[in-house]
Length: 246
Image 1 (cartoon, rainbow, N blue to C red):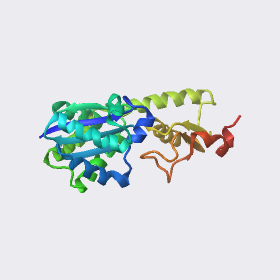
Image 2: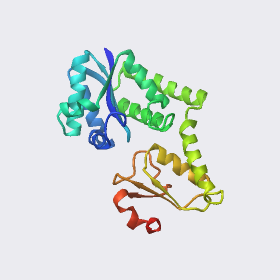
Image 3: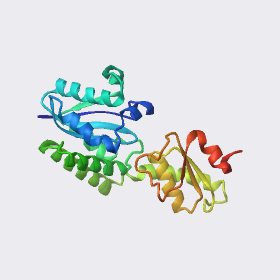
Image 4: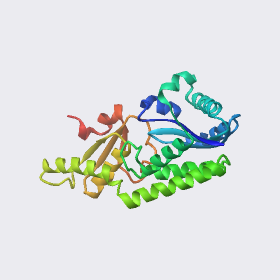
């Protein structure tokens, strides 16, 4: 058996395609079952986040495994495999291991070094273990990947890269507002990793109330809906948050 990683991310696919490929939590077990029921796939872990949908699999052959995984992804997206071909990337054997380790370390994230992906990988692994779709090969891969991710964040400070970008932007804003953002209302456009980091930083600075507008109809994965700011879909936020209308 060899490792095969197949997926799409913000680097290769538009948001509309990622939304088609995304697997809701209620569908995860069924999708994992479909993957390991394929002739060439014996183990599978499925990672489905805002910015990526990836399958890590143990396969008995490259071409057969790739065809099996693409067929399941195409069924999930409701599109023919050929329609997804330009958006998918493929890593095999040692290259697959390297890719998963890069993902775990945050090197492949939209915000380089963001730590949220590590928790998402852990959740995907636990889900696969609970569904009995992860065997010896993927247990070893995922456990090693989680260790690599933890070490990368603990020993390199890579997660500070995204924080530096947000801090610099907010410092510039504060310079235009008497040197402080405390007590200032703020509108964050986009609820991805950078948006979440902006909310956390603004909260620490005492800014508020905070409003987030996002193109999706619901809070994105990992968003702190209970304790976070008001979240409105992009077309409706001007009427729902009149303080931002001119």
